Length: 333
Image (tube, rainbow, N blue to C red; front, side, top):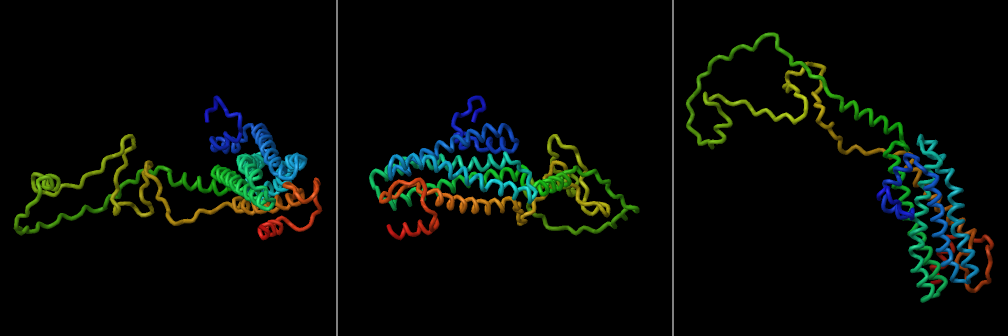
């Protein structure tokens, strides 16, 4: 995106300028304003979607669901964010609290905006097929899909931070030092001069051989006017590079390795598995923890839909769990 005319919608910037968002989080540039915009956008989007959920029961349930759905995501974030931050500190990451919060808010913003994008579909089935069990499963599936897409953004952002050395700084520094050592220009190695000159070879009688047809071009390239074999062509020196004397393999003194020219890239070792930082592994564990906390908190804050066979209530008694209720709903379809 152009920096001259930033988009008023933060979700548009996240989707269009994803690399710019990650760079801003890495540099910690104006994260307070970015996090505030994402928080406001997420709250509004979740409130709109919550109103659609509660509209199945009554306007009063729509109002309470519009309040409770943003509260669900924010309380889950408040419960799980310290765990993510401390996990990163324990395993050597250099993420600040603001960076961790901004990363998770990117995921929540994408989730909430994608959910509100599905709101017209949910409203359509609310009008045309007002079945409580189907409507509940439909919206649980919409929220699950939206959350998976949002968490995909979270893992992508953490991978960018890992590339910048914020998750495994020691490993990144070691790799950088090794690459710098490989790329150090090698000093010119003097060619070893033998102590005694090679003895002159005795003349050997050359037997006459039958003439063989040789192409004209090959004859010109492979022989000289005197009949002697021509030396192999010397490869052209790359333009703009210093001249380095070619040293035959047998003339390199003992203790010297092969000469590495500055413009040549170091050999790439194939088949070596790249080590994943511990912070990335713990991120997936944290995602599972975030999901379990969120679903249990949603069960505690219910109802969001409102069973049409029951009267309005702001909260229900805590009995059972979210997963058992989903299985029971599927069985009763």
